[in-house]
Amino acid sequence: MRRFLTVLAALATLSLTNCGYNAIQTNDEQVKANWSEVVNQYQRRADLVPNLVNSVKGFAQQEKDVLLGVTNARAKVGSIQATPELLNDPAAFQKFQAAQGELTNALSRLLVVTENYPQLKSDALFHDLMSQLEGTENRITVARNRYIKSVQEYNIGIRTFPNNLTAMAFGYKEKPNFTVDNEREISTAPKVDFNVPSPNAPSPAPAK
Image (cartoon, rainbow, N blue to C red; front, side, top):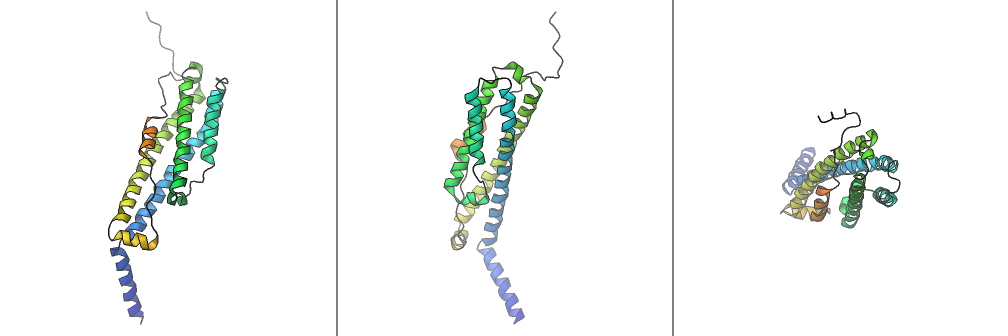
């Protein structure tokens, strides 16, 4: 009897493997892992916002509308629970994407405003925050690209026979991905300009 059960279990495992169940599981876990990294990097950016706003406020208090726009956009991002369950809800994913896009645009407007304040651009704290923001934006791009590729692989997998039958039987559905318009938006903003002298750099020698 024990041998029969062992053989039955082996056949069941083989059946699940052949019908793509294990592959679906693997791809699903990869999507979740990549999504977690996307969320972590977006959170890293959100954590920079308060210090960035305060830094700009110290030199440009009159830019209240721009500063308020960044603060409100960050608050909207923080109100969304970006759990793995969100990946099964296209509407919730779209809301998350839109909120992050608003923060990206708000930061872009803030960086444009800073061009009018040379003293701010040469401030040590602001320069450090800009370095952190630039690094974070790069990490966001990398994390998003990994997520996009893993979702594409997952979605193709569950649409391919016989995996599609397994996906239907176990309730696996296509996961939402970042849109083309949003990708264009992310790839162009915000831009961080470092063509300013470091606050500790020596002054250039006078022309002779």
